[in-house]
Amino acid sequence: MIELKKGLKEYAKSVGIDLVGFASEERFEGLAPEENPFSIFPEAKTVILLGKRITRGALRGVEEGTNFGDYSMFGSSWLDDNFNSLMCYEVTRYLEDRGYEAVPIFPNPPEAKGMGIPLREGNPAPNVTPNFMYSAVACGLGEIGYCGEILTPEFGPRQRWQMVITDAEFEADPILEDRICTDCDKCAEVCPLNAITGSKTVEICGKEMRVGNVDYNLCSKCKNGAFANRLIKSGKPDRLAALCLRTCVHELDEQKRVSNTFEKPFRKRDAWSIDIYDKSQYIKQD
Image 1 (spheres, rainbow, N blue to C red):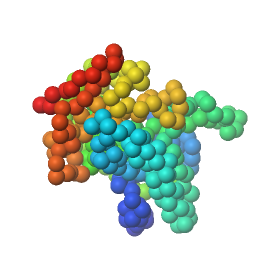
Image 2: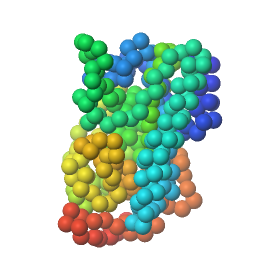
Image 3: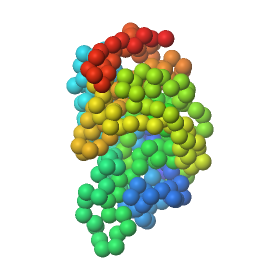
């Protein structure tokens, strides 16, 4: 299996996958059945999480307040529906060509639970939507930052995920030990809606993380780069281009917490913001 894993990782890189991590079934013990990927394929042995970066340039138009449409395509819809889905499909084919069953999983929002039809009588979790945040930590790829989103040591919050569940038994990757989040809380400080407050401790596979309390009802009213959930109307908004997460991108760049580095800083001028009363302002850069 060592050679299979090595070959799969090399293949993943060749088809444009930026991040790949492996987790064994025992890491998901105790996770609610409706969030557990092994509810979908009980005979599976491994979860493989695949990530593709949101290019920093896809955030530029939102950062400047001049163009939101290109992020919605290159950072969201096209990235998930086309680029990511194709790579997930290719990894599935790679495993099937070697005699292993592999199930490709799209990151449907958790709010979709209960909207489907049970597959069979007595199915304990007929509408399973795997927890991708949990899986990113379990696969050793990142942590949940104070901002409430997954941060990776490569890109901070700039990635989207898809998943493959397989009956091929791979060695699990180690849980990420190093901290990525700086605990600066600037994501909360810059939010004009005060949508991030306080904190709680979240533990996954023995890794403890300090996570802010995010009021997604307020986030849904954000005009600072947050987008409505495109998959389900009642789902959590997409915050990956919002002011809070763009501030996180800048801070992690400045503090050299990510390996995907650039010649010039992300934030080149004071950030704009619009509050809940539609009043605009500029946030002075420290």
